[in-house]
Image (cartoon, rainbow, N blue to C red; front, side, top):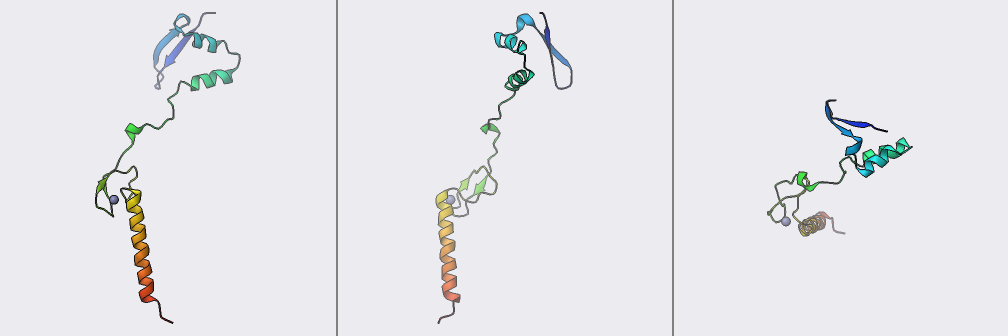
Length: 108
Ligand SMILES: [Zn+2]
């Protein structure tokens, strides 16, 4: 059986016609599949992989609220350049809160 596979772009414009002789072995096999489900999954395998591509990741210019160093987090809400800074601020806040409590706490 001779056939042609017409490839269109997204605007519906004919891009190329793949003739039987131009198909790869896999391509030929897929056209012989009795199940459209298999063919669909085969075609889907040609789609772009949904793997995260790092080159498109935007990094933000932020200054660490603890050590005032410039850092480039992946998220615009990041405040700390490192876990150490986050921890130290957390501990400092805790200390202040404790002090306040001690000051304001009514004795006895
Ligand atoms: Zn820092």
